[in-house]
Length: 340
Image 1 (tube, rainbow, N blue to C red):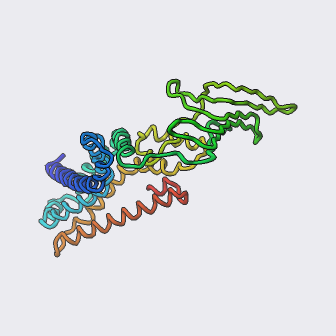
Image 2: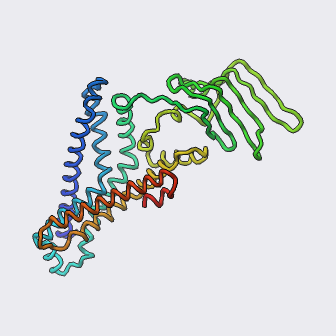
Image 3: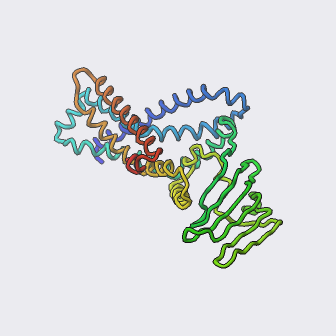
């Protein structure tokens, strides 16, 4: 690295981290004012508020606003350099504009790699702690209220429950059907099914199994109970509020494959999260170069107009992000296309 590269990278990272720190602190203060009544009403311990909630909320917001902040901070410090004729001096020394981009790419790449590690493995663990705190002290208690629940638990195997109690972990009117060549070949029916935490298996009670054959059907009755393994767990009946934020990238891929194998709904939000984690590091680099291009020219009226352009483009970025994400979640656009 040349002296100029070190100077620009240092200013780049310094401005970025300062901007993120200021914005995150403002968000923390606003969030505390908004949720203070919930903390008091539900008697949340101060230690849990600071360590379990805000210590994990701060990196979440720092990463969330990272692409936007890198754009705004790039516009801010580059416009200042242009106003002080530093950009003119650099270009006059024989440095090309493409060469000027190199330290910006280097600084953005450092943040991109850090961001990828954060969203891929570090933040999901932090989000588990944060969301667990929110479920106890902020959000209302979740009750699974769906009726006539259907899902695929294996290829050509489908489970059904008329209702499920997520507190007692008991499902009622359970059936498990096996289908081959669009024909029902076996059906297990039970009055109830209960999750056993010690064995990590389902316990079915008062069940019967009907096997359908060409010549005659076969019925097996049993009023007792037995443990069985089904590709279904109590977590499938828990609140799915932002649950994709708690998965690492490998876990997210497994979840997408599981939902696809079941033919269940709601796969779009997980796909959007996965593609977004891949695309964010590239967005950081692209937005930093956009910030340089917008603000490198010296303006007569000062840096105000260039910073204003930066905020307008940032607003357009947020607008397109929200619109494309909403369209993809509704199933009207492929998630990979919406994210990119």
